[in-house]
Image 1 (cartoon, helix red, strand yellow):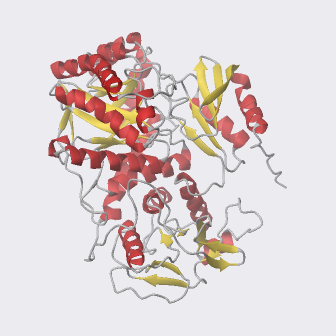
Image 2 (cartoon, helix red, strand yellow):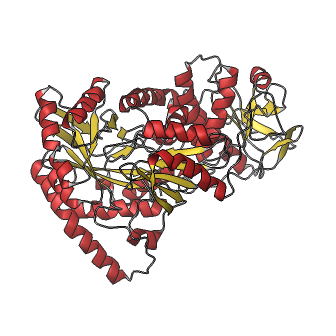
Image 3 (cartoon, helix red, strand yellow):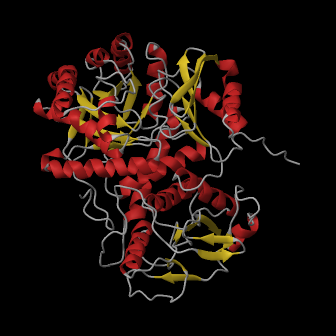
Length: 588
């Protein structure tokens, strides 16, 4: 299976065009059009003025598509008033209705907005988490039932010249898909294809796909597999795709996680629209989208000719590259079964010295400038060092970082060499970047390679501030799911379904739990983003009703209707009861 032309040379995937339009504004996706960025408002959809103002705020910063939740027919009906008021104020940005569970809400929303987003995992199914075996005949009966519910929406989209987004979410799959495919990238892809086949049978093609996950590695695998399957199905299955890491969180963590998932796929040539989902005010997402897109030419353009080689990794299933263990300094080794190490330049090493007695502390674990590192040009004849060595790409090689290290890994595999690899975020450290741009470039380059399974140690040099560079290295490792040095948060970005203030609650939870290591906490505003989309979180804090919180262990709800004022304390108690709590160290 192939999802792009080359794993080394950038070429944007050519898709068919879909058109999102109203009488005053048209947004075209795919077919070589510029990548579009979008966001989602957080107001209650019944509050017309608040929704209008948030949409105006997003349009003012350049948002090109605005999504609004429509959880009931009543909410969907109010989209008429929101759209009318926006148009009367001269704002014609296309609107997207976000639908979960309620086909009747979709049928109302399609009258008033330009796009309807449906989740195949819950559009026609009420999830019961039941295990059963479906015969082929029973499975076909289920598909016929889905078509009966979905076809009317497709026909309305045709009649009204609307667009559809068929968007599956990791952990939010129907029982039917779960029982046949499991909670896997393949399950996500097949769930979307079921709905796409219905649309195609009705000769409707104005739709796009999305495959979102809070885990960048899963998200990357899903999109690659989706495009590979579309390629197998035929040239006329070239539908556009929307990229996003769902529930990425806030601050640096949310930006790094989004940059890894979205950036890796953009560098693969995939993607026609993007959203950076942050647990912050929605307008904050758009500058990050714009900055991230601006980095892709810098991360993909090659000035050097080279011969390609078979990729050393499976792009559809993560597996860490096999390497031999190598001692770096003191008790610190890399490669083999060792965790991925963080190296530093001399300045970084002195600013964040090694603390082998406290492996959870942010530190430069070895000094790159004093280590013996075998640096090579992977486009030239390979010369084996003849003994165990740390291998990296030589500075000054005129290749993008991702290309250079994929080529290095391939060359090592061809030679039967299992030397550990040191990843660098830049091969030209003389280039000076602002901290926000350095964060994005380093996250895309290193995160993409880590998601490929390549890398035994990393070195960040795009960030010029020594302490911040080492901290960024750890944040990238955690976001890529390679190493845990602090609490990992899966926090949804809020919407009109949210039952509490996500930003303030997330801040309170982080204040109480941010010192924990090896613990993942999901903070979800409602049941839609609750038990399914928490994916692999250890604990969940989920809005159950206004002012009431449900707590989860994994995907299992264990405490219900806790008053919001008590819920953070009860979450801490739950973590303590499961043996994952430790008291924060006192700062002297």
